[in-house]
Amino acid sequence: MCLIRLLQTLALAGLLGLIAPSVQAVEVGGIDFKGSGFLTLVAGSVLGSGAAQSASGYNCPCFISDYAEAGVYEKGGLQWQPDSKLGLQGTAAFNDSYSVTSQIVMRGASSENVDIEWLYGDIKFNDKLTLQVGRKRLPLFYYSESQDVGLSFPWVHLPPQLYGWEIVNYNGANLLYKDQWGDWSSGMNIFSGSESLKNSGYWKMYNGKNTRTDSHWSSILGGDLSLNNDWFETRLLYIQSDIQNTTPPALVFGNNTRQKIYGISFNVDYAQWVARSEFLYINRKESYGGDHAQLYGLGYRIGKLLPMVTYTNYRQSVIVDQTLAEAHSTTSLLLRYDLNTSSDIKLQYDHWQNHAQSPFFTTASPNTAVPIASANLLSVSYDKVF
Amino acid sequence: MFRALQSHRLYRCALVWLLLLPSSLLADELLVVTGEKSSLTALDKNQVRNIFLGKVSSLPDGSNAAPVDQPESSPLRDEFYEKLTHHSAAEAKAHWVKLSFTGRGAPPRESTSSSDTKRMVNSMPGAIGYIEKSELDSSVKVVFTVK
Image 1 (cartoon, chains in turn purple, orange):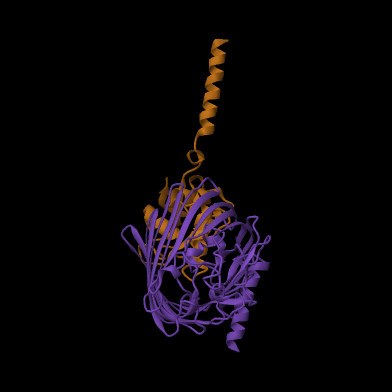
Image 2 (cartoon, each protein chain N blue to C red):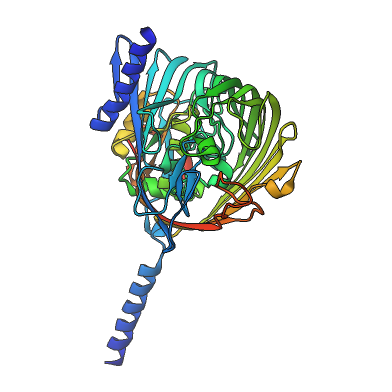
């Protein structure tokens, strides 16, 4: 009951931020409540004049923009559901050391009304060390934790070849540490927990739009380290966990199988140049094999305008038969314009290309299915934080 | 006639050069300031940058850092981030948005003007802000000059 009341109060604090931007903080009974939020509105359309064909229950050619939420742009007109979302965040600070934060997100792609993406308590030991306990985003990649907040990253949607995974949250604890070593500033995060996801959006794209698959990552243990020096930043990541799916898909995680995730990213913000790169390897040799993904992005700032080109690639390794392996890439052209420091508009063209030997995105028999070769998406977005 | 023409050309030439000059060269110098009673004496560029981007939370003396931004509409804010961080003010805000919605930090407080910045750095321990040189007075102490 107390938890429900706290959630309601925190959500209300976020709502206050939405309807009255000037009233974002209020003190009640010695507790400071702060509210904030974010909004992303996206309209996108799959381009091309060919006839649509059904694959996994979707009208294709189609473009997967958000694997975790089954955010898919299908053939046939303008769509807003896959990437549009509204988030509210509320924080109750009891003093300088203790606080509780909740973040709820309403999204067009989700069948649920509201998702609780963050709900955690914060214990600040000092200016360098903080313990957090509760539900959080899993820090898989550079922008994973802020994946719902469009203003925090350059693109309309995060590059799906890298950011598309079945589990993106965890329940557990993490320890944050930040410090300065000479000219380098550093941020370290060590975390542990688990996540059980009912009716995974990710597996609908493989098993069928109307199927239900539950995913379970347990014994999650990982850490990330960020190092920053003026115009250069690098980030290292390691995560290990056990995986289990209740309804095994074609490439099976029948019983608990171990995975090890390795990631590294390099970012440059020098003068007008903006460069982003990320590299991923997942060792899943106890199940099907492994996953490899890379991202390369280069942009040049012209005042408030950022033109940027991005290439992301995903390739799977399958031990038993490599012809079953999934492989695809996306090339994106982006124009971002900052309306002010709290809002932007973006225009993005994505070209998705299938490189696999076997059909991707279909549940039909491999002998009769027609491969979906490519898809083009044009999308425009408006992002705002308040 | 010839002399008048020459003078006119010189005037036009000077006007063109003036228009071509980067606006930052024409702007007032930016000063990073703290309260007059603060024990802080000087910061280097890296320290100021790291404090205003949330890379560190404390000042060199170990006390809690409380950065103060100019209002979003202020051109000083654009100039400050451009010169100090290789980011525009909008990119710096995007960076803070990434931290504040992921439990990794709270963005700088915002003043309403340079006068308000001077008031805030004197009313909060560990507070540092930035103002234009023409706003400098004895109520604040300069710890870094942004060039």
